[in-house]
Image 1 (cartoon, rainbow, N blue to C red):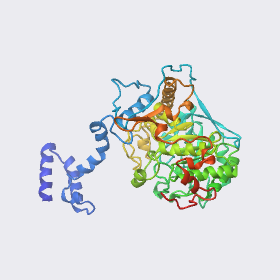
Image 2 (cartoon, rainbow, N blue to C red):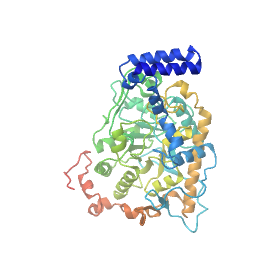
Image 3 (cartoon, rainbow, N blue to C red):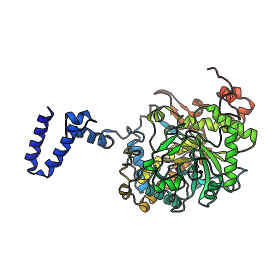
Image 4 (cartoon, helix red, strand yellow):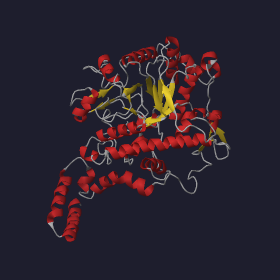
Length: 522
């Protein structure tokens, strides 16, 4: 069967091409297909079976450009990506003929506008990060570049992001992969993320090295330090960068040997309790010269969040900020089970941390940021209405660089040169041009946020409340967010935890351990 099929294929090729320049390579490939033992389809259908692999590679593009509707693509649909592209390029970002959303379905949410818009609202807002224990607070933009490591992203992508951050006066989070030479290349403000691998501040055994940390953290370009407890893409999961991928540049940034497996443990080795976390955060603040120190997490067990609040109350040590990463986040690759089934979505996570801070009287001292599919002014407005003080964006910034959502971030075959270490692919990413796009996207998105605030008749985005945000329960009913979710009053967890939905989690939380103090009954 295979021989007859092969004969027919070559007869057709010979008639069409009339030469050997094509038939000889195809013959060699066909013979290889017949002899190899790894793929059944190749053995049974030499040459023709390769069409399946070609179609598999082209599937994301064919689906995105020819099959999907404007609102169907995931993680980001066509309209969402087009909005980022338009703003990054400085093109028209208006949409004709009304919304494409079904306003009577649960996909529709809306912000309450006012009959008297406030056109006198300030042109720009920033947020001061750093509590009373912080000697060098930082004035942050309301939209910044979320954590993406060098190694996950290319050198050109990192340089373009940092140059864009410098031009737009917003910060660039390094991700946990260390502070590389490319992060330093254009002088943009940096938030140095420290993960469980302590890359860039570790000793030869992989433990935290205070001297190495201080040496980098005290540089002027580093404005804040962020302890990564977990991330939206794969919360509670460690990682391994195989030895073959640990190049000299990556080894330099991470402080690890070249050509050896680079391991990120699932848990930190410097602490194991809420009090230990705070004591280490205070030490990092001192070693950095008094810069703000915060944590980033994707919320999992609510009692662990409350345990951190109790630890802050009992020790007197304060974090300067908390970044909530939603389970919908993630610029790189993760086990599909983690992407699909582990971690709390941004809205629920943000509300829990907001309630934890407000309910313990800490919200005025500890700032709160939101990260997870942030790409528009409306999305930012909703996050701030749920308690955030500012937002971070990762994938939207990748779109600004030119990402086409090819879903090849983990293969080193990113076609746009963003998520690859292949120098030939990186060549197409021109740093100066893409940096302008990053800065332009951030500026236009903040302008969109201001237009939202003006339309709502408010003075600033922090005046947005849950009652200003509504969504559909079904086709006949809608309600404001404060009627759907519970929002605590100041000190309510301290004064009357039994009146809150978190009574059991509050009781289970303790400052001395992340474990549960009691066996809770549902």
